[in-house]
Amino acid sequence: MHLQGEKTRWWWVRHAPVPVAGKIVYGRADVACDTSDAATFAAQAARLPEGAVLVTSGLSRAVKTLAALAEAGYACDPAAALTEPAFEERFFGDWEGLSWGEIDALSPGAPLRFWEDPYGFRPPGGGENAFDHAARVAAGVARLNARFPGREIVCVAHAGSIRAQIGTVLGLPHETGAAFDIDFVSISRIDHYHGELEGIARIRAVNGLYV
Image 1 (tube, rainbow, N blue to C red):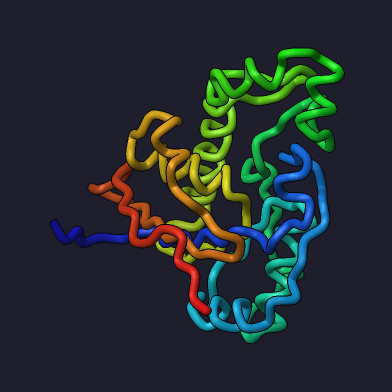
Image 2: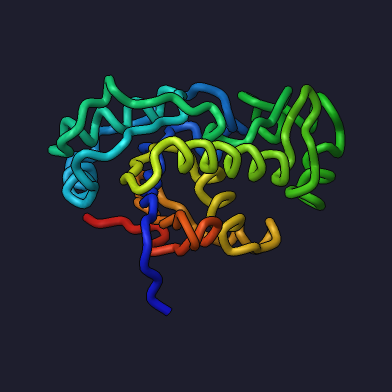
């Protein structure tokens, strides 16, 4: 079915590669990223809409990715980007910055308990589970939809946050939504409708990566 009506178009961009990925649990920690892949950034920059509302999670890897897209040819002013902490990656509490081995040494058996229920488990120190994370991402989307109806929104965020919103739109269980692969610097697109179609969303693309 082809829907007509005003819609807000979200262009979700995952941040640039993180060298510590797979080595530590970094979640919401502000770790460094690598923006040296000029070909990928140029290809992605050419596909983003001009005149969009710019949003980042505020973490440096998101901010630097938007700056790298601008340097690669995307016509935007990164300094004008809004910061939305709701789009930060899932928070792993006391585990952030640690390897799984270090976590197990501090709390024997904790990694196993996490992997037995990675969606419902809350790490110590105020960590989030997948439900907490998805709820705050969805709340941030709702706020910006209300503030910028009918606009293009380019949002540089994180794999977990993008997957969470895709899962929310599709009404999927969290373990199913986590099956979506979101590559570094990939673009995912979700349209949110307004007016008589308020509350309807359509996913146009997931994990678009052009090189």
